Amino acid sequence: MSCQKIKKQLLLFLDNELPEAQHQEIRQHLAGCPDCSKHLKQLTKIWDAPAAIEILEPSAHLWRRIASKLPASKNRWDLLADLWQSMRGFAVPVAATVIILIGILTGAYLGTLPSDPDSAISGQAPLVAAKEAFIKTSHLDAFDDLPPASIGGIYLSMETNQQ
Amino acid sequence: MFFSFPVSNEKREQQSSYSEEESVQDYELIEKIKTGNGIAFQELFERYKKLVINVCFRLVGNKDEAEDLTQDVFLAIFRSAQHFNHRSKVSTWIYRIAINLSLNHLRRKKYRHWFSLDDTSTCNESADLDLVSSDCPEHDFDKQEQEKIVLKAINQLPADQRIAVMLQRYEGLSCQEIAAIAECSVGAVQARLHRAKKNLYQKLLPYLKEI
Image 1 (cartoon, chains in turn orange, red):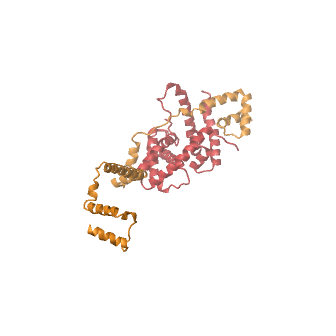
Image 2: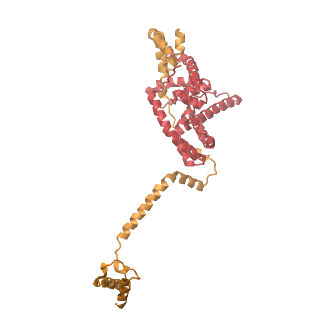
Image 3: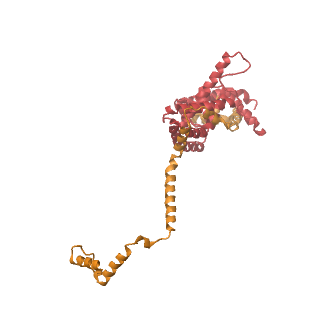
């Protein structure tokens, strides 16, 4: 390959975009040709500088400019709907946490209230106590529950009524 | 034919894992934008604003015009989200919109110049090339000047070659990704890059003696 032909392909050589055989051929040529080697050095210097390019940052107010030009059909309710849409993923875990917290706090509060067992059996307490005393003195507690139509049952009801 | 590209394998792997993870989120954002969700649109804007403004900037070469174009690109994204089908990646679709609007802008600018009586401005379809910042450290000056030369040469290429080179050189995209953006075959992209680099060599030749 002539020097002229080699030089035309040096950018492709630098970017490794040549077929392997052609790449090797140019490499061999460069090893023995000072002129083409010098040319490659110059080209490398100018071509390998993309880092020097400026990276542009958009201005701070660009979003406001764009947002102001969006379709005006969106009203306050639409924006609230957007907000809800974006928060929807968090809604269920947050609601579950709130419910559990309310349960724990209510339980803790109820646990601190004084208990009043007398109020629970007011009125019925003497009657129940008498019935239990009779069952114990007459040794009826040895029996299981007496069926209502049985002799034991009739006897028990008569004795209870007498007392 | 064997082709490899200057972007390292490591960088390409990082890009592909990043894009796989991100593209799922991108699709979700697009679905929300289809329903008119402004918050999802703002999230997409935050994610792609830098990419869009820099693609526009490299194509038109002017900061103010790049910012105006970025605005147009995002408005176009919002309007056309309804028509987005999941056949391509969201980033590919955004690149395509940014490139098309930038090229349209350059074409309009060119026509405006033709019909304008004011002949003081020099305008063509390529960028004005105010691309390298002047407020960088002094030791970078040579590199910046060299990059300015390269950019000037790239901007003189035909549009298809220019886009292929820009996406490869500055965005680090693979031939497959460039093909998806340009809606052509991988072979066509490789041919464009091949032609572009031969053309670029001719355009850079006068500057090589000065270095």
